Length: 170
Image: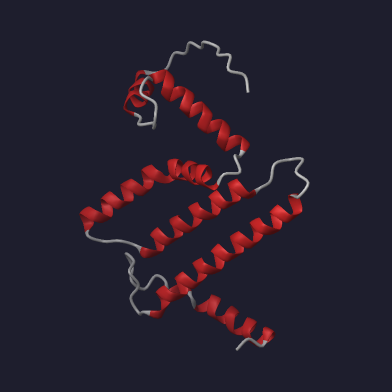
């Protein structure tokens, strides 16, 4: 990669300039440093780095503000939702696995990598399903609406019963 730099001059609205000055970017202090870091992050997201940690960080950047607002509301309201927390955590992790796991063009072992990606996502999905079913065991789940899970597990349980008979699972 070339180390040659090019100067850019941009005009941004005052709100954006204030946002950049307040923005906390590790290792970046000046507006120029922060813009370089934002461009690098955007390029990494677009190109896909193949690195789970970087992919997870990108996912966290997207959802971090909403998660923080939710935690603040839950804290001041003395309520919480296990289903929301587990769903957001699961979807974030699966998205990071997907983003990091799709192979780059031209790799010889693409099919093997896709098979591994599929296995990882299947495993996370089964784990998530088990967590949801555990919440249904109690009459009142730790959710804003304590019966939200119980009211919705009927059809999945019917499918499981059919599957159990079809596969003769004991």
